[in-house]
Structures are given as C-alpha cells and as structure tokens.
Image (cartoon, rainbow, N blue to C red; front, side, top):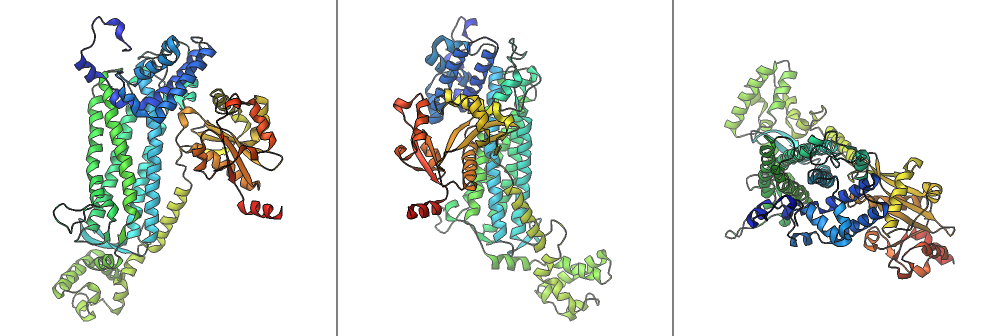
Length: 625
C-alpha cells in the first residue's frame, strides 16, 4: 500500500508506478532506514507519542528485520513496495500490527531519505578510505623495492630526465593522499543529521534533535529544515572526490599501459590482470588498466548528471532528487572497484631494470647536467643552454650519447669542457644532484618513503579509535550494554557493577562519540573472559568490533594472562580473530553460575571459544603439572 493514498480516488497507472518507484535501487538503504527508524522510535518515546514498552517492541522488531536484511538484502527486490521506506514500514506492520503505523508520526519521507542517504555515505566513505589506504600502502611497498631502478622521466612524452621507479610510485602516493584528504573533509561536512526536519518546515513535536543525531552517530543536527531536506552537497562532493581520484587512477593506468607496451617494455603485468586476443595468439592485453582508464568517464558522467539535476531546483524537496542515488551508488562502487583493481595490478608486476636503465641513458636526458657543469665553469645559464643544444645536435650526428663524446669533440663546441665533465654525465650523478626536498636523489626518496610509512602506520582507517574507557564514558557504556542485553545478546549489568568495572572496559570512539565497548573480566583462576562486546547498530561492519577484541587481547597479553575465552552466538567472528572452540564444561564453575542470569539459560545456544594468549607458557605449565 502507498504511504500517500488517502488524497486520491483513483489508483496510479501501472506505467506511472513503474516510472515512479525507486525500490529497485534504494533497497540499498535498507539498513540505514531501519537504523534511522530505531532512533525515531526513541524520539517518539521521549515526547510521549509511544510508551516505553511500545518503543521496545518496535526496536526489537526493527532489529529482527535488520538481521534479516543483512543476511539477504536481495529479498527486498521481490516486493512491489514503492520505495525502501514503504517496504520497511510494511514489514514492521506485519510484525507488530497497528503499532507499526505509529512510527511515522512527525516524520516525512523527505527527512527520512536525507538521513538514510547520509548514513549510507558515511558507511561507504569509511570503506573507500580503507581502499585508498591499501593502495597507498601497496605503492609504498613497490617504491621500497624499486629504489635503485632507474627510469626515464618524460615531459611531452619525450624522455626528459632520469628518475627512479620508486620516485614515480611516490608521485601517485601523493596524489592518492590528496584524495584521502578530500574524502575525509567531505565526510566531516556531511556529518550532520537531517532527521526531525519533517517535510520542509520541521517537526511539530518537541524532539531533541541533537539527541537523535547522537543516537545515529552524527556529530550534530542540521540547522535549517528547508536546507536539510533539499541538501545534496554531500552527493556532489563525494562524486567530485571520486572523479578526481579516478583521474589519478586513470593517469597511473595510462603510465603502466605505456610502460607495458612493446615499444617501452619496461615491465610485464601479471597474467591475472591481462587477457588475450580471440584472433592473435601472441597478444597479452592490459585490460584491467584499460578498464580503469575507461571507467573514469563513467564516474565523471555521474558527477555531471547530479549537477545538472540540482542546478535549477527550487526549495525544498522535488522528486527530481530521486535521481541522486543511482549515479552515486554506481560511481562509488566503480571507484572502490578500481582502487582494489589498481592494488591488484601492483601485486605481481615484474619490472625490467636493465631495459629501464638503458632507456634512461638514451634521449640525451643528461643534457641538463652538462648545462649545469658549464654554469659551474662561469658560463651564464642561457648561453650554456645554447651550447648544450649544439652539443646534442653534434652527438646525434655522431650517433653517440653525450657521455661517449671525446674531450676533443666537446672542445670544438666549448673550450671550457675538461676531463672532469664525465662524472657529471653519469645516471648516478644526475640523480644524486637532485637533493632539494621532493627531488629524486636517493636520500630524498628515502626520506619520502620513511615519511609516508610513518603517516600510513599512524592512520586509523576504521573510522574511529579504540582506547581504554573513562568514567565519562559510563553513560554510553550503560546504554550499549542495556541495548544488547534487551536484545538477548549479552548478559545484563547493573550500573553499580559497571561503575566498579569501568577499568575493565575498552571503547571505540568516532567523531567524539562512543559507539562500541568490550570488557576483559579476570577470574581468580587467572582465566579471562571477553564480556559486553557491543556496537551501536549504526556503527557495525567497520572493523571496530574486531579492534575492540584485539585491544582487550593485547591487554591480556600485557597482564600475562595465558587464556581468554568467550561465550558467543557468533563464533565465526571470534574464530577469524584466532579463537578456537572449547567445551563449556572446561570453564570454571563461577563462569557457569553467571549463566543463571541469562534469560536463555534453559535453551542456551552460545558457543564457548578460547584464545591462547601465551601458548609457550601454557605448554610449560602443563608439562610441569
């Protein structure tokens, strides 16, 4: 059923419905729509529209729906719902009846979709930051391996001056660093919550919009309702950032295509990223790189499209804005795929060092060094430049490189040239002289590598940071522990217990907000347990849960704890972190007593897993026993 049918006396034509409906693409916002709906249910409770019990019923039903969607998002496409909002509402009504019809009180699809899209952009942005980081890491590794590989540098696609392959790779590290910075800035600007702005004039209920923003992991609420529902700057910014980054990827692809060509033969690409010809058996085509180059135009088209769509829209919302999603989804998917493929291309690329060195020696790329030599002899640079031009013409006539011309031949051109000219014309000398910061001298390349490695090592691509908990984090910890205990996933813990145990906790923090927690509880036997692991629903899937577990395991190692265990319904998550199955019967009696508080104790479906922190110490202790 449509969400707007009461005003109409006739059903929409099926052709219009097909033209109008957006479920076929906005189904990708399902998780965000459900998470936003949970936050809205809390806001409705805060102003007395629904009771606490009703809110809990809605939240549980929405969480059940969220799990179902995460397991199989494609199921949504079997519905004839108009859009993702009507699909979620319909599913909710099926689960809780008329209570589900209360959820949309005070909310419009205008602020709902604006919120969903921003949440999606935040999630996707964090993933793209991780892809950019991985590509930079791979380029730095490649640069490390190619510090002594001399490569001809080009201007106008003519050999100009020698560089190293390491210096070439670091140029792209810098380009992708700017992309990383642009994306980070874009994510900061979009980090404001439109929910509660209504259709255009705000909601009629006295909601605390700052609290709604906090519940959804935004830094703040938006400031103007008209702007909130019609703002798509974040879409334009993300597409602009993607377009610039695709430009960089395309340039890198073009370089590597040229270096891989038979005319250059500087490198070979892996068979895994190339293809053959259906007619010519000898061909090995650089298709991965050509596709990266080609897909750049596809991303640029999405940017142009949204700018043309928005340029003449009056305030506030217009249905034209439904066109914001398909281009955005496709462009960011394409950008992410190209970043991953570029990283893959670098994996098994074989450089032919002798060929690149030979090419760097050709083309008279040391001519500038001869000019600098003459300047050192007191000749003005402009005159030296002219003399060297004549020398190059002479060398071409003799079919010799400059460094193989004799002193007699040089002196015919410039009497100032002596035997000491030859060291200046070597490749090593040419490189070594570029000592200014950012130059190709080995010392400068080493400095650039060290600086990049330090910068990348200190970078957090999870979108947040993990740290030990403080007393000021207590409210957020209590809220998360209560949320997951109400959902039946964790044991409940009273506030006095949490106050006493705050030193056991680690938290994950993003944009100043606590969005996850975990604790390490130590038994008097020296055994430790991972407890109270939980993330805000809107913060799952970004690696911070993993980071929390790794943080408490590191703490266990420092405390010289030998074994850590966990009771969980998601054993696969912990097994990826090195935990292995064990028997509950091997756990201390005190552990099993804690299970008395669990509402599922008579139908327990938890699995016991253990992590050996110090395997050698444990083996030694067992042998002694």
